[in-house]
Length: 115
Length: 219
Image (cartoon, rainbow over all chains, first blue to last red; front, side):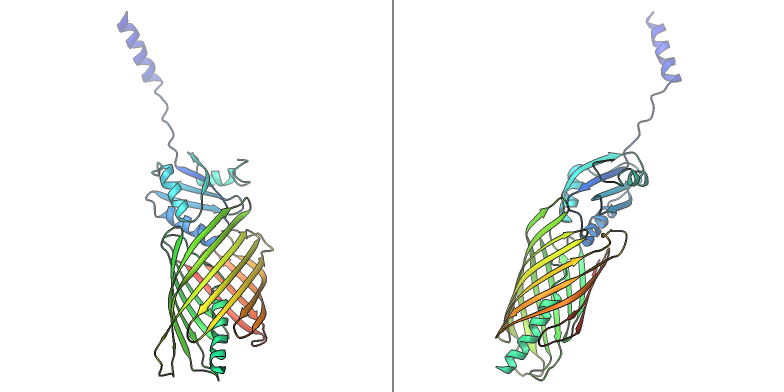
């Protein structure tokens, strides 16, 4: 009986393999008080130095920085915090997403509170 | 006395106009500044050493006047973030800057003199409002003076990182040396990501309608 169960389960797995999990490749960061062009330039530069970062989008009005990675995000929250602290700011929230920076830019166009 | 007075006037104008734009650069970044005023050129190179400390080397060149020959000054300063407050609409900073200066008169046989410059500065910035107040001290055998500077600028079109922004405003100054003198300078600021340009017309009892221009670049 047990071999019938095993065969059935194997067939089900073969017919319906587990869906591939999507990997977060974008960061959306809410940065407190980001109004200075020179400081924002520093944030942009620091992220661009990170291996795998493809795009950095900065928006003063929403205080949002969006970072797009080529594949999987390679940075920990602690590393992101330190990078932003070095530029003179602190972050309020970090979101990891599998959507593209362009999609996220539209999504957060009105600010972080109303995505 | 007149020689000292003339040098003092030149130095005070230079310090006040040369330090008004940015007092700090973020960690790991470098900034170059060129300032041209009625009587001098100033060149600064700043480096962000940490998130709360930046270093700056400066060279100042004053024109010769009827009171003195051309004067050159070179120095190094540290700039510390004393306080940084993140507000809903912007940011408020307090900085303390200071360091030694070497001052030399070109045609004089006297050796270079050592001076010290210190500044306490506070600024508040949003995407449409910029306000700054500072108090500077300059002490050297060639000149001694104190100066209070206030700037208030407004951006009619809210500043954006992706678009150049124009700011319009006024700079007021009160300098104390042998006497107290007040001046005002209508000014325009243009900011585009890594570029920051200040231009204005400095008006006082000693200098009427003199243009000044300051260009900064972050790299």
